[in-house]
Length: 230
Ligand code: FPP
Image (cartoon, rainbow, N blue to C red; front, side, top):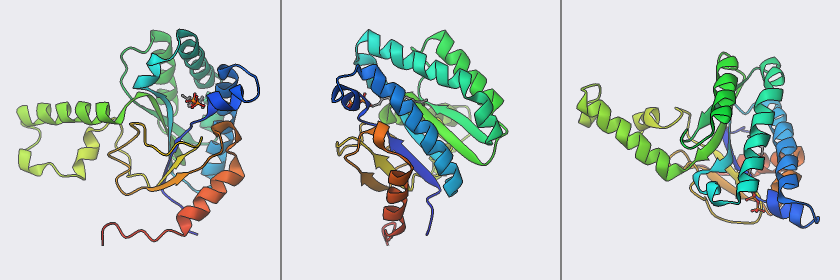
């Protein structure tokens, strides 16, 4: 079966998973974190080279301060405690998103994990944090304008392929985009990179989306006839 090079996941439904169990929304995020750990190891085992995940959107800052703080602390916890495992498993971590207005302690752990895993090669985990796809395209366009202005790039040399270099991370296009949690929308996630992605929507809330479910998504992908406009 053909394995996609780049898989992306919109990890939706943590809050509802918790609420349906009479728990606080934060419990859902905690459980979602455990799920992501399992999926990452499974993705690596399956031979997936790039895994992008939507951890926090620019619009998620509109949530209650309590929930934002909880998520940020959960992310810090993961970045601090999982470093050794990531290195042992040869997983490289990169981030996509704007740094502003993330707190210094979050940025410090992001920079640390990026630096410590930078030479790892087997699998790359791209964490979209304070991320918005339209923001990414706007930020990339500004970098393009700058390069044209300072003479690094000729206007006529810009193509849809080399535009990737101006995005937050220069990754291959997404082959398979998974969204858990019942909604059928893209929510400002990697719009440029997902231009020919196969999209797999699944009702399961993210905390319950485990290894078997990823296998099902991969089987779905394996059965697609990708024509790329031909
Ligand atoms: C969406 O569910 C999920 C999030 C906004 C957070 C995702 C974060 C994690 C899985 C934590 C671990 C991440 C890393 C990178 C270590 P929701 O809250 O929108 O759920 P709802 O739609 O049911 O309210």
